[in-house]
Length: 423
Ligand code: PMP
Image (cartoon, rainbow, N blue to C red; front, side, top):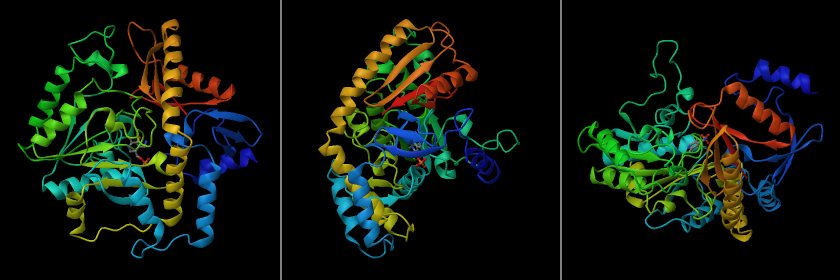
């Protein structure tokens, strides 16, 4: 019964795992875009297990593939060969441009980003890493050092500073997702950054150069960025900014990493990968979430010479390349292609963005609507003039009301002021 499970949750499950809603949801079943609770209530899942269930809950084709593999072989080790790793690596890399052809399978986005940073350092033999303010790259100690959203940092209150989770030699670039408010070159009203079309980005480029100059000269190991900042609230960069940032890092000898954990697998609609929107080819791409439609898997894909830098030592994980995960991932790719889900992301996303924009024009508490495809953030504010975030209690009421109406939404933003609506 509900009360009993809630008691166990409080006693025996880590309190760092928060639950949404005054009365946390107890879910029972999922089918495509729907979730069902134990009382039989149906919810439209616009959060998709944190931007993860890319082809639908318990999609029959993915379920059938996983079940078939479960009957045959669950786990062995990637030391032996089984067809599923090779088949999956071939299928995945066919979707990436040259020279991104070597896959390392991991179990989570954090682990993938840890590995990407490690590869960047090994390959360049440099230490300095660059990331953006407002970026989220994971919660493992290494990835958390790159995550630049304060509420995820530990130890601030007890005098440790961020030492417990900070990587040394990390520099944070200018982009903070606080919109063009930070920029002296624009006013909020004129800005169209939320559509990723703002061209007045000289200020950001100068700030980014400043960040690079604080690193040891020409000693940059890597730069990591999400093509659209997800946890920060579907924040887009001014047009051309990411391309220029990649160029500046390359000129200084660093490798560029695209964190496609949220933006990959067609979610942004116009392209399969978020980096393609920026007309760039990263040196390393990390991916997770939508890759397995909820099956715990993730990947780092890179070029042979970077992959080889890791091969100089044994680098191993037990579960990466699990046969069930690989066949599930492979079925996910088939479903995306067969059902035209990337096109669907573009069409439905464009429709939703337009409709939300109408709400923005009519409601004082909607400061901005942003995103691309089915990665949408709605910025909730006290009023449009101040653009101050809507207080947390009022935000909670919105989530609560939506849930009561049968719609599940996510939360994001530095102040928790974004509503995530995806599908
Ligand atoms: N990168 C991005 C862009 C993410 O959104 C997340 C998860 N929210 C991660 C990395 C970390 O992934 P995981 O939770 O699977 O470790």
